Length: 196
Image 1: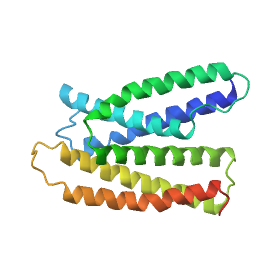
Image 2: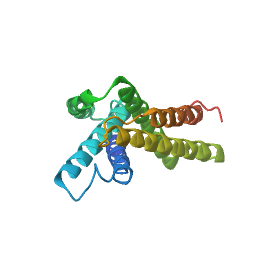
Image 3: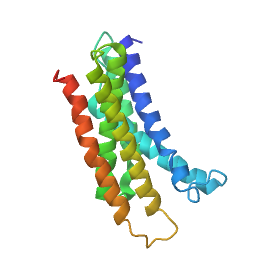
């Protein structure tokens, strides 16, 4: 397997695992609904982790749909097609989400994919090791984490036992976090454009 293929698969795997791992914080947010001591709680947690991982991996594939071409174009294309097909099948789990939730998932997965790729590029030297690059990537990571936590809080409130819960506060906090994420992601994009 070529080095480019290994790096691409590593990035895809990291995006999926990162998305799934981030969703595990739902145990802290709503330990009643996502109680790991019960089978139903584990099922809820597994579903949220799988959906978050799929969305994150789809964001990575949006940015890097195929590994960089080296020698084995056919193998890479077949593997990418297989991965895209499996992600599309997995995305049917998002059918129960409303438009606001789908757009938030898409925003968070796309920003995570960009930030993860920037981290990889920084570590491999593709992005210059400057204080500006370092600060921009870490600021974007912090903003991403805050936005994901706000989304998890919103989801936990939505799934709470009391179905009459007013989500106004959670929606406002999530919108605020997403608003802060925009400039942080733009800072990472500026690194790629050489506008340090």
